[in-house]
View 1 (cartoon, rainbow, N blue to C red):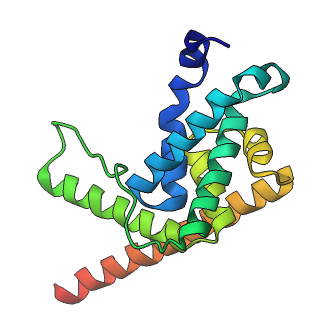
View 2: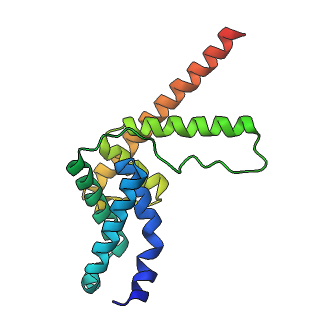
View 3: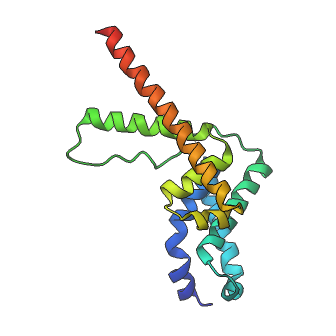
Length: 177
């Protein structure tokens, strides 16, 4: 494999690898380190790429494994929020709506961190990375039924928590009126 082939096949998915690593390690610097390690490993193993059916899924699996290893080796504690996912940029949105959207995104991120790891990873891969069920099953090495179950349960937990928050907000407004 040449450098051009690497640029054409791996370079376009580096942002996806970064977002996935960031979801796991919850720290921008750590996620950058993980992606750098992944890219380095992919470059070293470029001669074996012809034996791999889905290079992107394989890259995501390497990212997952390295991110989890990173967490284990450093006994990293998740204390920071997810960076870069609260982008609200529209000229037609009022400042109040921007604040409400940022607040909602912050709350959703917090709720996602409270989900079990499998549900959190499946939700991230499906909703943020837009991966298919089969790609997720291959990447996380779990049966398709387990992927669907984790996705269903994760969505339900988020929905329940968001509805609880919404109803709480409505009752608070009614009391103050």
